[in-house]
Image (tube, rainbow, N blue to C red; front, side, top):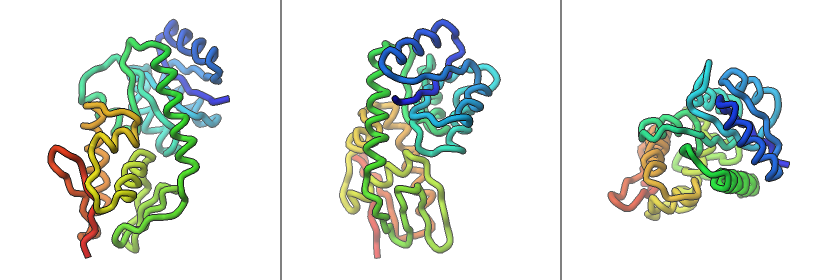
Length: 227
């Protein structure tokens, strides 16, 4: 039975979400502030985390960063009343995988959860063969990217984006194809946030001048190795 960490400071909404998810077969632990959320996460394993952004003591972004410092793989879905693009990008930068804007239907939330759990299960079955990217060794299973002089611990989403580029090395991959493959949806705000992940990967790989993640204007990206 999948286990969910639900973090929501509105008591009524928290109970409604918890009850609905339990009726759909999930085990749910509910926390009403950021500190309790972090304590709960450290006390037991969870299959997915649902984080409200506006929380007492520590906000959802801070909670997500703490979760990511302990676990790079668990999906994090933000429950947010905020609609500003900057807030959504901040969510992705802090380690979130997706967001759902309040008010939302329980059916939509449940479907989002099912997609993430299915993808997590699928990712666990992916090939364990490491990739060679120029001088770098990319170990998808352990989320590491390293060469003789550098070693980086990737987030789950960074690794998924890089794996998709590696699987299509030398080809132009469309932005919406990456979004569908990694996030399961083609969304404008997710697209803007994906640029954050691409920028991070470029930063990691810049130590090898033969590696380029080229931006194909209006189309997508291409991972190219010269030499």
